[in-house]
Length: 53
Length: 248
Length: 232
Image (cartoon, rainbow over all chains, first blue to last red):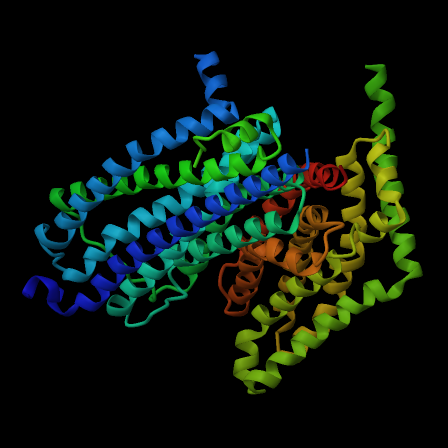
């Protein structure tokens, strides 16, 4: 338990590490959503084109 | 060597290779970060001046380092794209910007949280590094806003490349002018670090290396999306997406 | 040898012709020159109203307020640097002109500086005195503004060229230019503050001069490149 308290600085230290995790996960999540959206948009367009042909 | 390079720079090849390559950056990167975090949080002894608060360094410094590296990649990518008209290079620049902005924000946020126990305030205007980092964040915002404002991708690429190159020169000037400015208002900047002992340094280097690898993986993934978007009207994308196997 | 002999006066006259044309245009539309000046004066009025009129506060914040106001008012005038040329098609003329584009761009920024920077320098002492700035410090301030606005015009021309023809260009222009312009303001405002407290202020002046020379020699190329990109 002492290790987690960080000599009274626990809140600061842990929030920094937590925030880092959060931002990286968030960035990756956004990147994945964008990739999926780009992929799906192309797919929809191509399928529509194919049907028209 | 040259042919290998040309092959990698061809969009379909890059698109496939990046997907294969990305985990080779992510897995060792995460492993190093995990080990570095363990070392930094629990194993390394605390700093004699700052106590355990100094452990924030293990996320703050890698973020600050990546914020600059991403900017350099962005500007170099833009410059190569302008000079040699390499499309992939522009895609790299476009992909680096949001990641760079994220790490710049992270460097600022962790610096600010670190500042609270050390300076007694969340934000110290007198610290030159924090000021430089803040201006860097504004530069990222400007870059991304310019990209977003121009509809034509090719035009956005070139215009933002010019901005990024001008920005690189500016980052250097910002650094020196802010240093000079803060030296005039001395007394407030007290972010003194005692000399780090070897264990502290090793853990920090491991963290920086791990963050860099993770950044590489994040960058590859984003470049892939950029490539897909830019090549959306090409034959290979059509073949890939309409093939029964799909691309992902 | 011959070719360059013929080219050099040609380039200079191209520069001067562009500058002269823009100056004439400004003469016909005095609002474009005066509005940023009014804006400058108004921003300088805002601060005492916001933070209070006490003498020591004004003396202390004067250099900073004047510099911030100058920066913002230059920004305001930058938007129109290439806009009217873009709208009436004379920008295309500029782009296909046999003269090197960076030289013509330098001519345009020279005109911009003469119609925005120099008037600011001329008006600034009046406002500085209302902030109780001593006369010798006013001289230093005018010098920093004179040097600083050169760089501001040139840096701003890059941003104006990048955003010309874009919708909502004004807000974007501020977003692009402000971080780039911050060092100029840091150098200028702090040199004046140092002068006000009888300190050595020459470092700031030299740095501003160096910045101005560097931007005269580099910025026109970036602006020219940006103009070509914006007008593809």
